[in-house]
Length: 316
Image 1 (tube, rainbow, N blue to C red):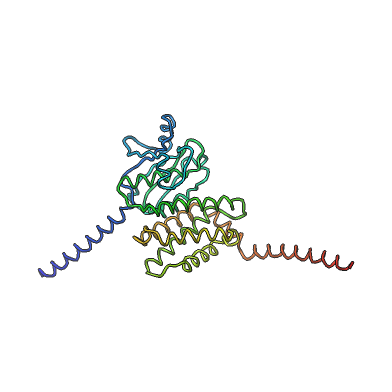
Image 2: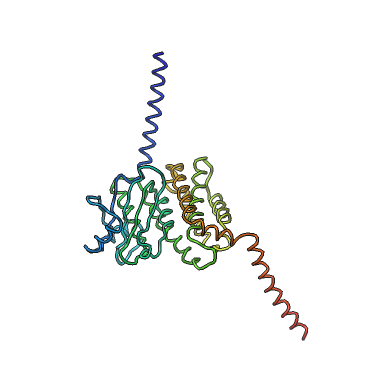
């Protein structure tokens, strides 16, 4: 009886220890407290207005983001830094949530792009609010988040951060180029990106070999499944393949592919919940009926020019 109790106690201890270690590892990428990220170029009145918009309370840990921080983390420069952010740890639940409190003033980076970049950088299980008192691209806000995480002892990889920033800019560029195309939406693109990340993370968990061929197959298949193959150019697809190759090689996905996949899946569900109408529009555009309709138009154009050609040839 004593031996059974001893063995049972040992098993519980080992399980508990393992659970604690796993929790500690996961917490390396979670915020520990509420954090306010202040754009360094805000004057006093602008600062107070920004804090009010974000709902920042008293005695909140604050970090300023200045030009040297932006250069250090992203390698780029901005004329001024006004975009600010408020980070709150998720007590219960998973994934990264982003709320843009001033959408009229964040002119370039979308909510889904912020979340995808945060996942690539290794940020986990946080609610992030972003605001600016005047029009800015919005890229500077994530810089402050990287700085805050580092200041609080979190282990974000510098190369992952740079890749996240490049990913954010590449996806923004793709969305800007295709914004006017019928059926295209930034949400559809970012859902596809999250799906690719999830598949790569799953392959990592299964210890499958990940090389350029594997990544390119995942990208091409996912683009087709999300009906983006008729919209994106070959160059844009190559950009996405490059993004995903960097994801596959990243420190954060190799450290904990299971947690990474959960973050990516949480984003997919979030986009499906909030943008189902846009996703459905893209699906309808790429149905067999739509493709047949477009094919009939093309056939009519070809036949028209054929008739002109034959008519002209009859005079020769």
